[in-house]
Picture 1 (cartoon, rainbow, N blue to C red):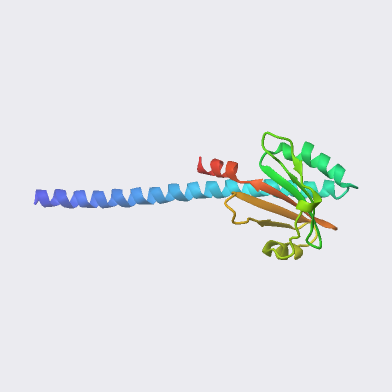
Picture 2: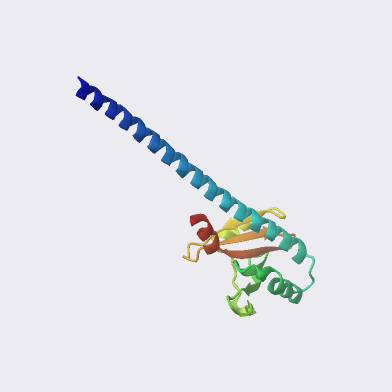
Length: 171
């Protein structure tokens, strides 16, 4: 009877320990996922605020030179921003500036600007209200996300490289 009693005690203890351990692992996983979710939400909020600020400043500029100067000297200080563009309400890019790593930015020539009318994301952009933000990502393996805000006369878009936030989330 003593051996049977010990075996039963062992099985009860093992079952309790296994259940407790499994429950703790689930709690740890849920905590980690919640922390990662919070990091990503804060990241989105940061760039939402940045694109709102950009819109409020740039909408007061009178020409592209002022916009380019502001983008190159202020906005591109954030190395996660890989490009900025102005898109008019008829879907034509009117300005596109690239933030080239370890180099000066590049303003694309008029002939390199695209008409976005046929793109799926422009269809969603058209439905935006004044100062409403739209996020989209093109499945091009670039690990980037675009933040678009509608102003009264244009859309302003910044493209964000997500590699840094992914590294923060993983670590």
